[in-house]
Length: 221
Length: 221
Image (cartoon, rainbow over all chains, first blue to last red; front, side):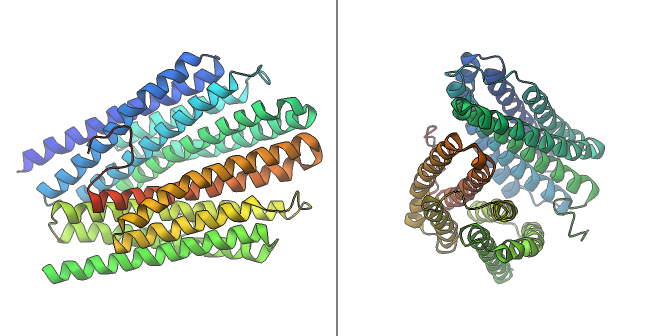
């Protein structure tokens, strides 16, 4: 029974990592559809959306089966529940990549509003947050999880800078209002990707340190 | 053992509903801070945020305890896992209300950009989606859950209308760019509240009909 459980748990982790890889790739391709003005990348993201959605359902089923077959100790239970939440976060990261890909298709109908400076930096940070949060899950790496949290503030700062700059362009030239607004929505989507990576990192910190850092103001644990 | 489990499950549901009530009130107060230009409502939302966060942690703990103490059948397992996901969605609805409340504080520093017509309609729809999705959970009401899904399209349509109108104002008068943009962010927050209510309704449909409607394109179940 015990070895059975270990095997089921290993398979579950492996599928979650696979899902993470798909989500990461979707984010990378969608943002590069914008940055490199490449509509084929946007198309790829839309084509690969189903694979992520199928995997989400498969992982949910594995979680239910694992809990139904084995009576787990609290620590393992918390891990499996965390996998279930991380699964949702990864699927929603995939959704954000789809939003960016669709935005890219609209953006590419207009001339480029401005050279992209902060957007590539913001997207690299967000991608790195997703990658690091997943590595933190696998390695149960507390420090890496904390790094993810600290990057979220940088992502938010870049978002504000991008907003300000694009709003200034909009004030100066009303003909760029629509494409500039589409870029703002892309930055919003990247912000949400960073939020989901933060959720994942918070789950890791909770699992490893037994500390719930989701609501620092509470300071209960 | 059996009665113990029923009691634990009833308490879990009751706490989830209490959490739902707090989230609903936060949404209502935050949006009325904007619509009624009432900064006290925004302040209330910020003060009550901790109560929602504490409840999220309490409900997560209850889920772990319930699963650790009882070996559940697959149907009950799925319900308890759904409670855990709904708990996250409600907390994030609370986060969106906080975002709206903070936006309200910034918006109230400027003269009103335009009379609010679509925003009250959008917020009523979003509030109703949250309320109905929770009622659907308690009553396991398939039809009500489906109503929530159909309203999400209406919310998205109103969001697009609000975006278009505010962007037009921004093109016509560059002095309203910043406050108009804040209103756009409020509409984005309402959209996300609708998304979370939709997630909850999808969980209900899955529980009641045994059908996973999260990804209609897959059509696997």
